[in-house]
Length: 121
Image 1 (cartoon, rainbow, N blue to C red):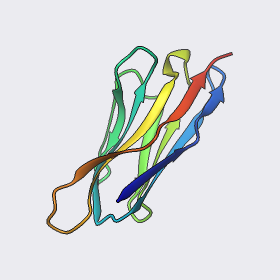
Image 2: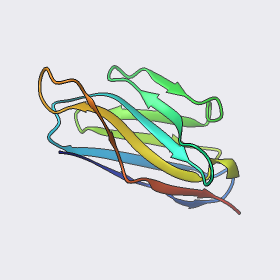
Image 3: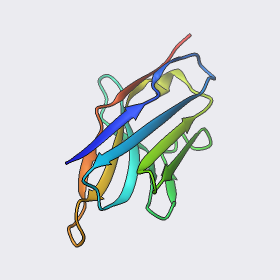
Image 4: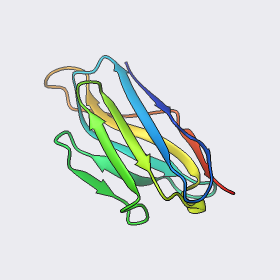
């Protein structure tokens, strides 16, 4: 089993910052891609930022220049630094990883439980 635990969400004023963290634990042999998704009320879940095992990153246009994703392969953790937050960033943020539990086994997708981010004055 693989477990993901997110932390760091909360209420912040527009222009403020938050740092989300995702910690993966359990039976993990390797982690390929990791990513942060978000889902606002009434909207589809969308990819916010992704990071490959080698550190390559990608961002949604709406967060480029404001959000930074990073990972620590030794600790199986991923962070999302969110700066210059806007009300439209309000959503539940989910951690997603593609992880293999054994050598030679293709990776499966795993999701965290989500953490609420609210940007409001």
